[in-house]
Image 1: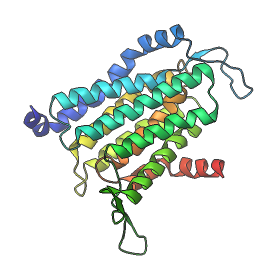
Image 2 (image 1 turned 60 degrees about the horizontal axis):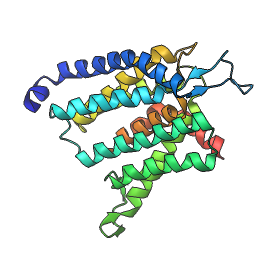
Image 3 (image 1 turned 120 degrees about the vertical axis):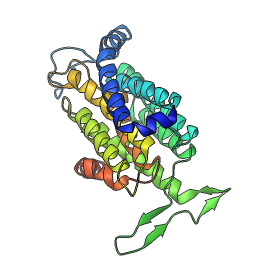
Image 4 (image 1 turned 90 degrees about the vertical axis):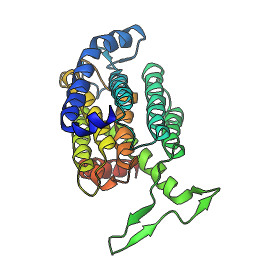
Length: 276
């Protein structure tokens, strides 16, 4: 089956993208009911919140569930062979940690000292699953090798860079999520751009291309309900999960950090300014 998928990958690209978009669209009623049932609602209890009443806030779970479904189907068809199963599981587990943490935060208004546990754990899971950066291109020429320092065979500097990168991207989209449809729309655009880069001759990674398309389709499918006036919010879990996914897609099969920064360059600078 893998040979058929690769031989007709343009067709399967369309099928996975529109399949994820449609599934995300169809999952909305279920997730909306679950959000109301469990009381995961965004209350307009602050001056900056202008929505008229409680809004379901499990959009992140909707995107996560769509992405999970697409990845499972891709694996069953043999289209995920370019990345290890451990790396794929790391993304899913890290994303699940963020979604659970986000749901708990929305429902119980966790303090920042508790919220950071979930984001740090998700970033750590990606690192422990084997994602690291071997080198950084030097703007003045050559490369800065990060793999020279190892502890028990584990590349320390490259892993620390990935950990910091994942945290930075996660918080960038968290800070960005202040307007209906903004973070979700950027997530879809980022997915499309990473998809295009994955097919370039110097990268040529079909699996990453499929994952980026599934993520983009899930985001664009949810955008219909997140557009102003939003019927559902991403929630804390969703706003962190989409940054986490963009960061993970940028490093899972070779560093494409520069590409992610093309999409999120200004938000990243804004997040750095907010932190400072």
